[in-house]
Image (tube, rainbow, N blue to C red; front, side, top):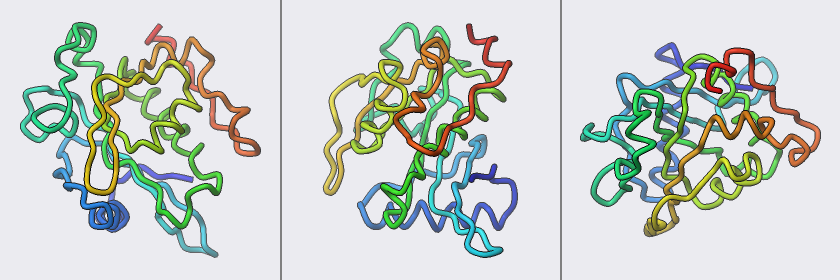
Length: 198
């Protein structure tokens, strides 16, 4: 299950979850974008919600000094004509994580539901991200050739980040998420608004 971060309490839960990973893996914690759209992934524990994962979407601007994907020691997505041609329909993905206590427990497909929500609401053409290598493999399994590595891997002290472009149109044309790979949990199908991308 997931929620759009709207309240101070939800934001604090997002920060606690994400910053735990920053500290553990010695990641630089990019500023929380003012125009960012954040989601918490959570599980129910009795009547309470426990946030176990996070994701942030930010409108892509290669000139933004706080870009999470573009710049020195990051990637150079602005060199690709198709991305620059569709810059207003391109979003950065940042702060993507699942708490280690909930990895390999079937929680990942809920991110596909979050993507479906964001796609239906904002009609993106591309997503850009620097994604931890394990997550990159998961996205490749879920979305196939719609996820493409662009550039060399960035090797950090405790992790490897892969520069990635997700072609949303290709995701939709390929029938969305490859649901059979996830067993019991079936991610929601993209809504009718997604046809605007095609």
